[in-house]
Length: 123
Image (tube, rainbow, N blue to C red):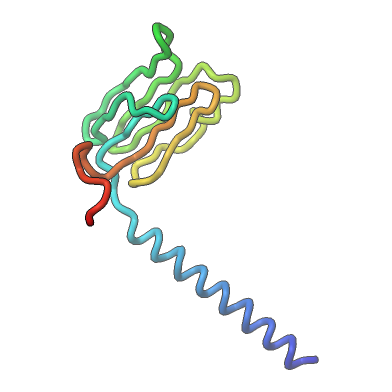
């Protein structure tokens, strides 16, 4: 019985060690973002450089639904007209691949590392 318990502990420890190694590799290899791509209804409507600070309103026709703020190389939603305010309470993002989503307004802010004209893949 003791041998089985010891093997279980070794197995769990090994799995945790491998998971920690993958997490460490993931966090150490993330790229800094260069742009905040604003998508509405699945279509990119704007792209702002993270190096240029500013406030950018996101509109739905004539109505401003969200306010994107870029400050210190990070993007965040400062104001939104949605009832839950999840996008406003989300932390600022700056690494490639990070997103902020506002479901009621169908707005996604995605951080990208490359320029808009860069190829999606190399063959």
